[in-house]
Image (cartoon, rainbow, N blue to C red; front, top):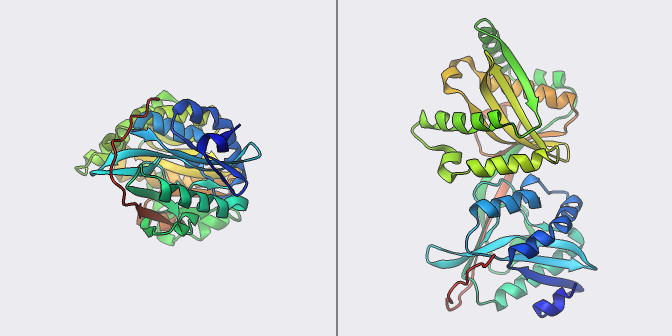
Length: 347
């Protein structure tokens, strides 16, 4: 693998490559997955099967993926694309907009060399005007890039699943415990309730997720994330990809055999990432959202998961379930160069 020769230089014993063609990116998918296995902060959103599906549905401009290799092993990847945005040539992280964690995967042993190499490349390149990188870790090593500006980004939150479920539930507020019980009793008096955990990319559940998510937001005069981003086809594809790896979980409450509430989640390293939820607004008064979380948490404790990650959003209800905030950052880096015409990607 003559990466250093092809790209023109080598960085501190690392070989550096800027990947601009999709076939090459697909070629390194196995190495990318192997790197993710070594990174403690990796989440489902930094895995190649998430990122590649995102690129297929939302990518524009030209791939601009920075990669570093050591003895034929991938040790760092900063997956980006170069596109025109608001009159400037912007380098954007693949996954931006609908992914919750995008800190690039960089092996800690090679962090200094990678940041130094990235700094050198960006300074010498005339292809870009601005880097706008979102959903980074609060302590992102990318902040070491000279001239970079960090600002707060929308935080995530997570509930550590320690002790037993009974111990966890006793720590919730008295009002919350009473309301969950009362809502459940009321619903049972009106019809059958069933809680399910589904690991397949079930078409009925995907259809229900998209339909109920839209209905919930339309009730408030908004379109919601799925409609706004036209992300239904993406969700179907990514659900299938994660189901094939036994990493998909649908948590579902059915009322009178109909889907009343559900959460689409991904599993990675014994953590549940609750990516998207939807509820039937027709049954809002029966509080199926609370019932769903109660049953889902009880299940995750029994199955010995270690955390429930609520992903992005600062809704107050998450705190009541014991969620602890995870701060994130957005990085801005500008580069004054004379604009050139942006080449097409040619994938």
